[in-house]
Image 1 (tube, helix red, strand yellow):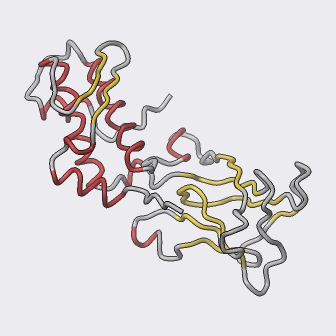
Image 2 (cartoon, rainbow, N blue to C red; image 1 turned 180 degrees about the vertical axis):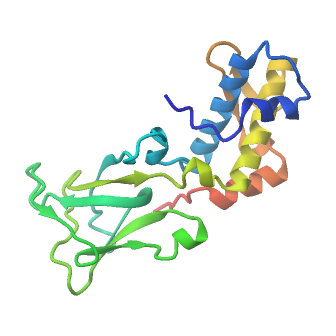
Length: 220
């Protein structure tokens, strides 16, 4: 099963000036923990559905479900980060049957339109204002989307995210070596390393990277 790591064991050990291989399993735990911590804190997943089986000539897809918020723009539906879609179908009456299959560009297009050229994902499905035949239902899970989800592929990991993950992994790794780390509320060293870290304890550069990528929270 893929690990979806944003930093390698070798890179962590280089940061810590280590040469032995006695604890490589532990360093793998550090790399995994740091990568998922970055995902959780930014609100993005910096790997794609298609990364799950790099040897598969046909990239795999994920199925996800959404529903339109009645108070939102009826012409657009914001969903999770995605790189491409293979199918959009809707349940028009909430009975669990997806009667309508949307076609692009007849019924919808993807936004932001310039996302690929900027190295960013699509985030929104926009209904074709004039030619579109369907609408986004407000019933729970009434929009079924199949596609390649994620902020980017691992091969296109932003350099800032790689830098951030390396720094976080270094801080987590020092806790294993010193059994203490400022800003860490709790940790467990073993087969599965768990570390609770505050964003505020990171260097200013790392905090700026987090703020650059972090999904904004809107309070109504």
